[in-house]
Every structure is written in structure tokens, then in C-alpha cells.
Length: 409
Image (cartoon, rainbow, N blue to C red):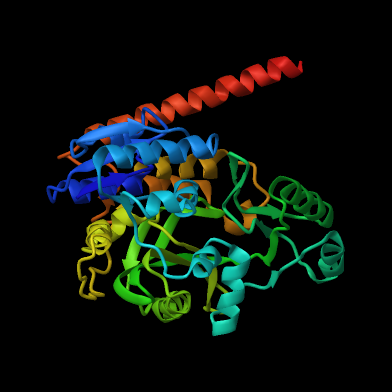
């Protein structure tokens, strides 16, 4: 069966393209960006472009349907909420040509992509979460103001939401006063129709546990800690290291959660280890492939191939072994982290940022044995495409900002 991979602009998709392609599996790769690095891999038999699901949701679904019909029965692999959610909710696609692994319960699927529901489930089964306020109105926000100490985390319930065919990607933000809090909550409410979560800021190490599951049973696993993220505030990992599942009790908590969800398919459970107490606090779940997928593959867990087999209906024997202490680095993202630390004017700098000299030293001297996420001597074109893609997008953004400023003047 052909493997149909989306989000070819992401390094996780590129890792899966290489994983499946090297096994001789026919790979069709797609993205909404012509310069997407995965489209230029030597392991892609055919590539295609689709409309951005955040700009034209219906057009995106129709494009994937046409592609599935053209290539016959395919195994679908997706790497972002923006692509997975529209397809998972389109029963004509997943009940037709495209094979994908989903939980048996639609309710459990929706819980995994709703941060409020995920955290409430974690509370119910005894998995620790940060102090969280589930506000539903402005009066609820006013009621909790005396209890808050700043900075406070504002977290939209869903990473991606749509109004009609247009979607918006939403990220976590930080506020430093009551006025900022009220303004930010009102902004999120007006754009998404839902009040955001309000959380206590946790200072500590970020970590994650990744699984492939079948109805809540773990078939494969890997755990990692983040050495550096895209931003010192958090976000996607750029330098990361595999750790034992027993590390700070991560595996036991994560397995409890996926069992409660009766999850099927790939999932990442993300934690922050509270520096004050040493307790892992659940941040969120990603019910799909995750950004640090290249690390897991480098550590010996070929999640994309295992999912491919599971989607085909093959038996996958549980195996939780992987190599510990493996380190990988996404060089382009690590360079963005360095620029962030050097030049960003951020109120969180005294709390969460390393010194500028340490950031320079850490960037130059990568951890011993560190492996690249993107660069591969057997497949060099994606690394070159990533540079071109980054330059193209930065130039386009700067041009838009320039002309917007001219119009305002």
C-alpha cells in the first residue's frame, strides 16, 4: 500500500518519509508550500500541493480525497492538528480510500484535542496538573483575580479552531497584570468563541512521552527531555535527549492517561517537571505524530513504520525498548532560539532565559554525539530546501510588515 504523507514542510513528516522510503514503501508527500523540505526528499515518488487547511478547509479535504482516489487504498500519515482534525471529522475520507488509526471512541478523540477536557480527565485519574482555572465568563475571571500571582499562563482550549472554512492556530501566551489578563481573555473569546484556560506559571524542565497505542494498549514508546525549545518560554523542542520511561515518573503517568482515553494511533503526552516540587505536571496531549519524531527514530523506535503496519491491519507486537541518551538537534530552529535569546525583549527573561553568553556557547558546542534532525548525507536536498523555505517566508513576512506600515502612515 502507498503511504500518503501530509505536512511535508515539517521535520517530523520528513523523518517519516525517510523511514518508509528506505523500506521500499511507495511514498506520496504533500504540503501547501512548494518549498516544503519533505517534497524534495529522494524517497518521495510523487509530490503534490494542497490548499492550506487554515485558509480553505473544504478545499483541503477535497484535495486529499482526490489524491486518495487517484492512488487507491493508501495509508494516511499526518503531522499537525490543522491537517488531522478536518480529515478525522470527514467520515467519507477515512471510511473510504485512506486508512488511518483512530481511537474507537469519538468522545475520547475530542478529549485529546481539548486541553480543558484533557486536564479534567487527568485530575480524575490522579495525574497532576498545574493550578488551572476553568473560567467560563468575565465574572469568573474577576472572581479569581485576588488569587493570582504573575506571570500567568493563558492557554486556548484548542490549538486550532475554525469558523467556516477559515482556521486559526492559537498558542500559549503570558500576562503580567490583571488588565492584560482581562484583555487577553476577551481577545481569545472573540476569536475562538471559548474562554481560555488560566494557569499558574510552572518553572521547570519540559519532557514528553510518545506512544503508539491500540485501544489503550501501548505497542511502542519513547521518552525525552528538552535541552532547548524553540523559545526559552517553551514550545517545540530543538535539542532533546531520550530518557528512561521511569524518568521522574513520566511513563507511569502517561500510560495511565492513554489507557483512560483508550487511545489508538500515535500520541505524545507533554509534561513540565516543576522545579520546586520535582513533580511532572501534565501540559497537554498531541494525538498525532509530534515534532521530536526524528529523535525517537534515531533511538530505534520506527513509529511511522509501526503505524503503517497497524493501519494495514497487521499485528504489532508490543516492544517498549529504545536507546537512552540519544540527542538530536534541529539546527535551523536552534539558530532561531539563539536569536530569540540574544534580541527578544521579553518580561520573562529574568525568569526563564539563559544568559546571552551561555546561549552562544551552547549553540556552538552541541552535546557530544548529537545527531541532526534534518541534514542527512544520503538525502541532502531537504536541508537545502529548508533554508530556501525559511528565507522565502521571512522575506515575505518582512515585505508584508513594510507595506502594512506604509499603508498605516
